[in-house]
Amino acid sequence: MLLAGIALSVSCDKYNSGIADPSIYTNVYMPGAARKLITSVTSVAQGGDSVYYLGYSAYLGGTSDAKSDIDITFAVDSAAVDSFNTANGTNYRLLPATNYTLSDFSATIKAGSRSTDSLTLTVRNNDNLSLFKTYVLPVKIVNSDGGGSKIFSSGSTSFYIFQVGTQKVLSLGSDWGGILCVGPKSSVISNLASNFDILLNLPDSNKVYAAPPLHIGINWGASESFYYVNENSMVVRNTPPSGLFNFIMYPDQITQHNPDPANGIIVGAPNFWLGDQWNQFVIAPYNNYFFTEDTYGALWRMDAYTFWDQASWWTVPRVQVVASGFNYTQILSYPSMNPNALICVNNAGDLWYYPVSVDGVPGTGKQVGSGWNIFKKIIVVGNDILALNSANDLYRITFDPDGYIRLD
Image (cartoon, rainbow, N blue to C red; front, side, top):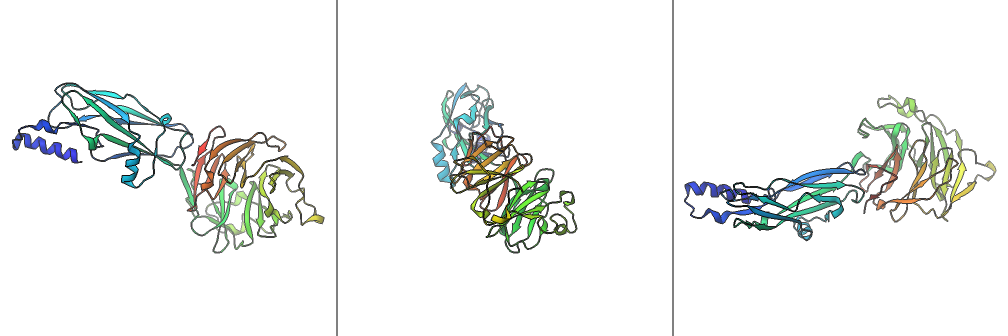
């Protein structure tokens, strides 16, 4: 803004105020940079290979066109990141070199003109960037040769800001009670801490849970976890002694305007009890199986609903160890319907993916993400991951088993 004001003042003075030497106002600068403008891009296409095209150029200030060619040289000024963060109280990262391309590092303000051609900054948002982080790219005029021009230092650097984001789909608020699970019709099931009601949120056509939740259970204070088995079955783990119960769901009765949803979606008492002491395991229903991870890192597989022995109700009879070295805080079936894999998060926040055979045996795992311990909890809805942050906001993250999602 300062430079534009000077240019306007000089132009008026040249013709009306008799300034003898207007050439002293001849400076080369980057449009926008002199006005302290910052170009900001927020990406909501995380997980893909989104491409953004932005312009950069150099301009000649003062009152006259260039009398001869002025050769301009641009560069990325990585050292400017620290000064930018200090001046703005931010902690942005330098955009990695693999994520951007400058169409040219040189351009010319031709004689008789005031500006270079517009050049193109191409930025690619791919797996190399960390989700929920902000990056800055300072592009600077480092040399001006010809025409007696000088570089206007305060307007020589353009800052491009890139916020790698994703879609917030639901806010559970401060009254969230700790339950989070996918439900029928790609719904999200949660609870309230204040009255222990069970809530069901239905997605709209944009996969956002914008409508008020349905109260499908009233005063379920004894329940601490829900597990999606299929569209007609939910398993609920109670508070200690941590019994596991199966409930029949009625998805055909789930509508946003259900007049009395608490009496139509989960009906009556549980259809059977699956034993106690399930709080000693990390549990993942998977098609016709249950996977349970014990404290020794063994992953057990058991047939769903057929393994309970009433005579030994105080223990959980496990059937077969199908993997070892499983030390994860969360294990989830992927995708949520008709799964063929497991996704897992460990204490360090590493995200792992394991293909699973038709008979329920995990194959060789691979790490597909890092930094996931910034979330309280994740669930799988369809092919996406919904992740709950510290503010109890739920974000939809596009998941690709062949990609890598950085959060650190």
